[in-house]
Length: 120
Image (cartoon, rainbow, N blue to C red; front, side, top):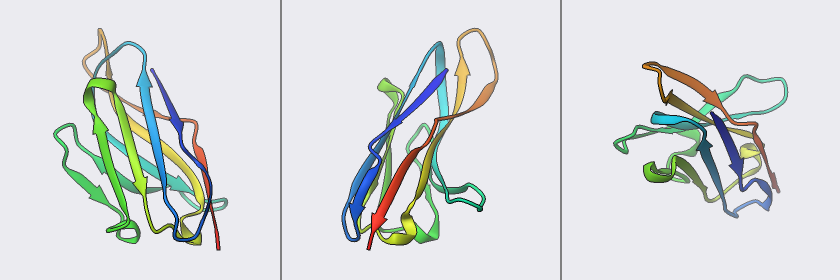
């Protein structure tokens, strides 16, 4: 199973970016999906998560600015980021609980990360 992120880049403060993460491989189902972010020297923190049924959770720092969504048919999760500020600069990682075909347990899968840089 692979998670591939896209959509990172450089944006000015106040701008927007949309991250995408597509899961591929021998996938039976995907449970929770989410986005984490990490800056050098700090731990990786949860930004937002979404259950298969669409229930969402957000870090306080991004509430009202970021929106997480998913397309279950395409095994894809999105993160719409609006009103970006310099504190949002980080490497963003996609995460998913994946049940592979032929197994009966969920495995925690990670993407390779995509860099988001917000210039002030």
